[in-house]
Image (cartoon, rainbow, N blue to C red):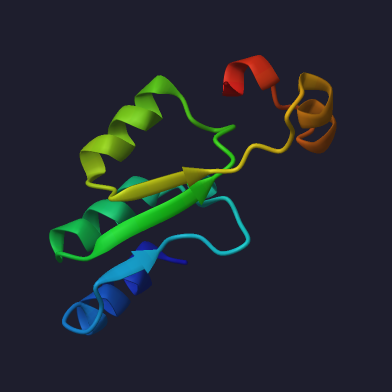
Length: 98
């Protein structure tokens, strides 16, 4: 979604919603404006949540997410063992994700 459209929607619903989920069957960290998206809702007193597989998290992005005002983050981890995880999550590194 375009950031301008997102802001317009948030402005229209800000008095009617308590929180928003910034994910649905997709990876929110792929959105190039995810930090701005979280911050904008936070500045309108709307709680935000994301769910991620965390493969795109870096120390820098993690810091930005924390500073953006995100209220809740949850993670999926696709296997209990290194073998299962790396089979299910191609090109991901089990040890890095832990």
